[in-house]
Length: 146
Length: 252
Image (cartoon, rainbow over all chains, first blue to last red; front, side, top):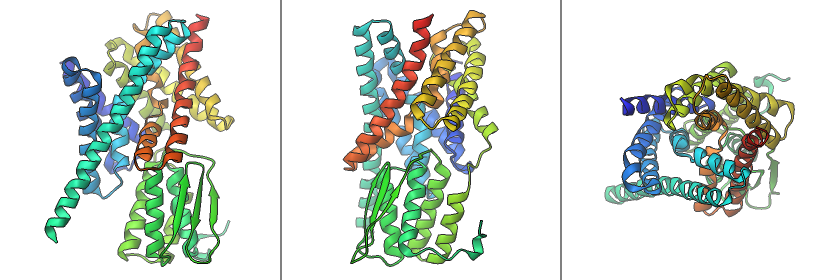
């Protein structure tokens, strides 16, 4: 039941972000799908492997879904990936860190801020890895067809 | 205003500049803007062109003895539809499906077109997304409605404040202050349960997710200046949101 709720809410949230970012109408479903798959992978991996690894894995999946949809719809990858990574952005952590700073609770604040920074980095790594993989695949395909 | 038919077609350089301007204003990555401009330039017959794009301006040189041209970009929003349509125009231009004249007409149309979804729908999407985020980040089912209301209110406020005063920091700070107050009110009235989850859910529509990803992608692609300046913009937004919410906590 928990996972079903999470699946539905993450799909709606990501598709909603597609609307806010003015994504073309026929891509909204893919935006939601990417966000949903990334979020569920994050949720499953997070208790076992830690936040950073699971964020990398989740953004990698978001990246792959976005690359595939970008190929199908012949549109820039960014249209699909932006809405997909939104659930993984460490907004909650950044907020927590900021709140601790205000309460003069500096040690946990720095810890949380460092964690938020690391997670932003891992989002980038996941996206870049999926893009590099895609380009390698493309290169392999074009050299084989020559 | 002149109607579309009476406008003369743009010169090849202006086609590149207009395409770059639309893409940059709509939130495309810097390297994609440069790439698209050079592709279009080749398609319209400018072979050795150079473009230098930063988040606040574009410098384009068509090669040869031509003078370089400059466009200043003041307003940047997120409009993926425009990014997609400029991208498809550049594809068609490169493959020879459309000519330069047709492309300049299409680009002008895109430039003057507005957001595809009405403001009401955007606000509705933002509020529903906020509610969903409150649940996703571990809130109770009872937190859905408070996050929905304060998230929708917050998104409306940021649109309104941004139109009122053209300082992004001020708009974001005031909005998150408002979100903090409204969320606290819900807790005070015993409608919501977890203040943190409600606030996090409702500020999500303001979180600079696109900026952060674009910053890192630009850095990785070697556009160091653009990457750093976008990163600074993202940090500023995050700070504005955090400070606004934090201000509420200091007064309580």
